[in-house]
Length: 97
Length: 370
Image 1 (cartoon, each protein chain N blue to C red):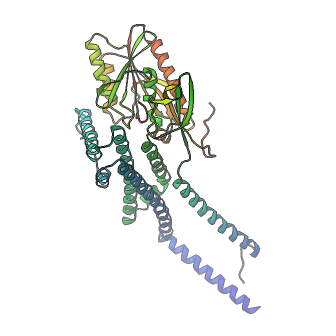
Image 2: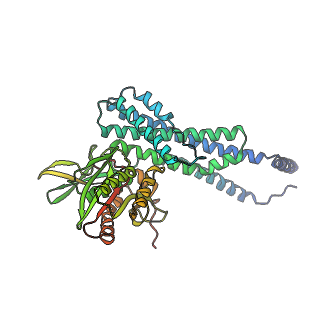
Image 3: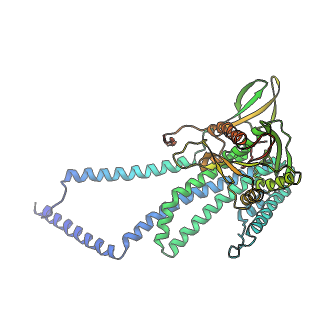
């Protein structure tokens, strides 16, 4: 007479759990690989100083810090360029020291 | 009822046989082979991803070069991809720095000349971006080839330890490859990167109207003033992708100043530096020594000239992650530039007297900075 460690209903549940876990792992890996292939959705801005005031606009190819550009008040100057990256849950938070 | 009992007995017998078989196979190392198979499959999947990154980088670089009317861009990129530098003999360390510097200079000139020939109609700024883009494409291709080499070698020699180590390190390799892939777009666009923090500090310190003069290959300097101290500011020549020769240029400038009876009282190097995990991006720290991450010749030039004339050598660093250093500059880092300028000024006023001369070097890639 064959005996089993687990009752039949539990065997089915265990089987389902294992299959579910395997699928979840495979999906997670696929998701991770897809994430790596996605472009970074960051925004790059150029800060232009025109006279006394500073304005921010989207970065254009050819912009560089120290470049003289035209603006409403006459000649402006690019003082800063920076990128803002989207915040994700995975972005690390600095530890409080 | 009897039939069901017979079936159960059969299943039990087969299970026991299978268990016995598995037990015997365990001694023959089949489990290990299966594990190696699973690792190899995982490595192969990630290798395909690295390959797609390398192909994409190559395509983007070729598109950029062709857009700027490059002649035979594909042939040039093929050569750059396989280009190598053989490190100098280390067994005999005498004059190793001079030999290494010579090799690096030859490499730099070779690249520059090749791109001048291939892109005669493009300006220096565009050519430098194409040069860096091709170096990134070459780096990605190298990563792909090297991982593939290790995998094939591990499979050929049945070296499961090699395959296991490779599988364990794959997430880090993928991260590095992904970092290069993302950096490529920023170099093509010409945006300043995290490593440009040093040159940005130099520009802020010298002022936007400063007159920059070339002092060495791709390296410029300007003269400024901080609280009645004469400040010589050195940086790579912008706005192209360029790191210049800050150490050699500093030594040259100091020799000239000493010759004219104007020995500097302080040398300050400002550079981006790798933060430790958990540290805040854009935090500032200062210390002693040459803040520069070159293979050696530039760093030793700073140390030699400072030691020779007994000039204090100070360093200010802007902390950031490896990924942040080669991608478009984050707002936190751009904001930290002002803090770094303030720290440099504090050091100058605190450690020198009025009328003294100081040399400040903004170390790093000057892409997107004048």
